[in-house]
Amino acid sequence: MANLLSSWSSDLDSLPEKYIVPEEKRPGALLAPVSKDIPAIDLSEGDRASIIQKIMKASQEFGFFQVINHGVSEKLMIDAVNVGKEFFSMPAEEMENFAAKDSRKGCKVYTGSGNCGSHDFGLWRDTLQHPCHPLEKWTNIFPDKPAGYRGTTGPYTVEVRKLGIRILDMICEGLGLTEENYDYHDLLLMIHNYPACPDPSSALGVSGHRWPMDWCGTSSKCFCIPISFSMEVHIQLRSAVHRMVTNSACSRTSLVNFFNCPSDRLIEPVKSLVSPSDPPAFRAFHMKEYLEVLFGKNSDSEVTAEYFKIKSQASK
Image 1 (tube, helix red, strand yellow):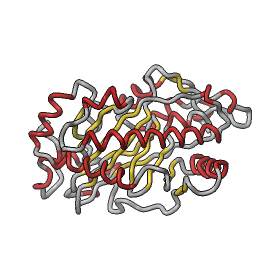
Image 2: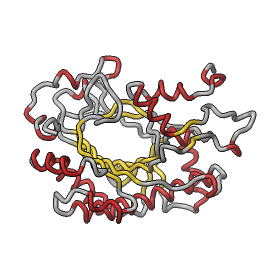
Image 3: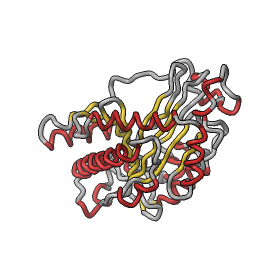
């Protein structure tokens, strides 16, 4: 745990060799091109049908969208980010003591990718991770420092889950699915801290990936919603490959919320959406198999997606 970037990286003048990304995977000089085309959907504007239409269009064309006027208070969002920053600003021994006590109870603090996946380079980030639904089951394993962590993170994750369910409902309605076709899962919170990096052009906070599960992360006043790979399997939706870059000016903290899919869940195209003109691109698989393949192939999401493609589709 003494290897947490947050506890030693501020004194660096150069990037340690283990964090240098292979040249073909580096972000390069153009670190974070900003796309103004990512749809921003106002959840308070227009009727439900028009909002669903916008969500479906974004999910099919971009695989990524933002939502504004979503009902989660701006103050709660800011407080949640701030308490995450406070956690990673604590003395190293405080974080070490916390992790030592709680890492086997569902709460983890780690650098890079932790035990999930293997890379030939280190990821420039620290992460605090823990389950948070149902809240009454997990609150006792939340960090008790900094003061206010539990009192802020609890209400925040409750509101985020409500928003996530609302969006999932609208996506399913847009696909013509009924409640019999889907259910709701547990919620996992990850707070990522990306310390200031001495060479952002040669490092990555998160390498290119498509998440296997549904999640949403905070960004200013909006929530960013990527379509997951497991949803793309259902046909008519597109998952977007995305990555996280670093910067040299300051550290950055982001909150990511995952709607977890049980490992024994069968992921397959919804039969009512399959037709001769719209055949499935991926075969059925259990989430456990997907995770095993993903982490067994150096966390390369594109290679993993290809693995699950139906051969006739893979050749097209």
